[in-house]
Length: 175
Image (cartoon, rainbow, N blue to C red; front, side, top):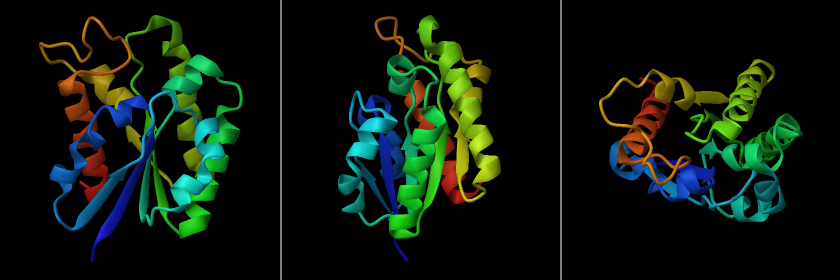
């Protein structure tokens, strides 16, 4: 049976080629990436109809970096809750949230850390959601090469995107 996965994100998703999941998961999965650079949870709430058009069993929600820059921590929990509730109710599907990497931009690191903690707390009240801990994966990375190019403190390089894709793959397959 074909499992349908849709990635709802921002530039991290859009520029990653769907985190490589089309090749990582195999033919029993269909992966659609509708990520849009610059989007926040509010932008996606205003574009619900776009999400409703895509039959989906599993949503990967990769949002929060732009929220941290635009809104800080204000309203992040309520917007994320609304987005999850909408996605789960319209198609009887599941959601995977992303505890984002903190980036190399010092000015938003603590805000992202706080918003990630908000996502972890959401899981306690919404046991149907899952969380992929990209923050801890990036924080514990001990490779010789950096995860971000010098010219871009927000978007990981190919090594970072590979770590993200592998984490999503493992969560989806239950590894």
